[in-house]
Length: 270
Image 1 (spheres, rainbow, N blue to C red):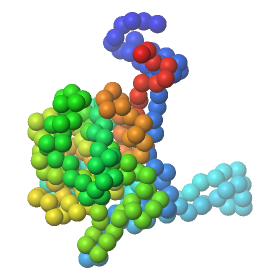
Image 2: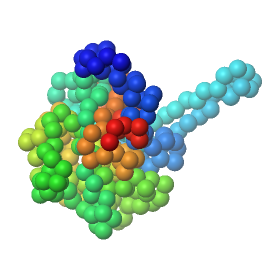
Image 3: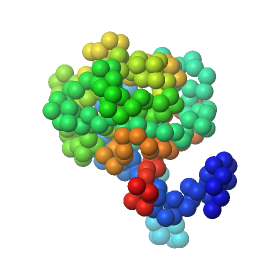
Image 4: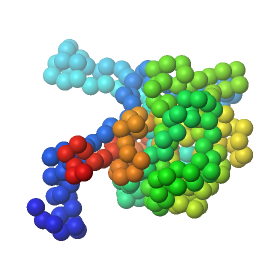
């Protein structure tokens, strides 16, 4: 195998590592089905409709040799991508919709912030700049152009009422405050922020300043969001490569997608 670290040599080495187990592919997506929870907003606003899957034919009189379905779903259902145009702060940005994203933003390194213990102890846990500085002291500086994935193990609740965790005062789930997102965007230059919860903001994010700081700051600065991720417990703190390519929907504000991560496999060198 060529030792050239450019072009074809890199791709050949990757193919060999995938075949030999040196690199593993991890699926970070939930199954998209009518059972997947979707965002619930106050009743005066428009609602995200549940996923619908309607069978067209399945090797029968409706189509003897083929099986297919019609699907109806929101851009923001299941494991999904938020483009800048999703939020009012990003509405006028160039390349702000999913059909116009720079291709080199669809494959990027990722770091994983493990705050699962804190989220287990406090369902309203808020990630702050101080938490990020402590994480960097232990794991190294967050590199520009990467995805930052916030691990809370909330994905374990996806089939239970706790996933949305709705109460009379709204949902309750962990998320970041403005200090954390400002730090990641302006001082670390991240590509985007991903969570295991239904949104990138805390369930009670409307009470923070600004309201919904992840959406407001990320999208206002041309950054992206990933929600409803799974499998973050299978990723290292550093070293994963994320493939996050949303559907190419005309003027789309977001899209369901299958998020894949490349991580060192069991066959990789120690």
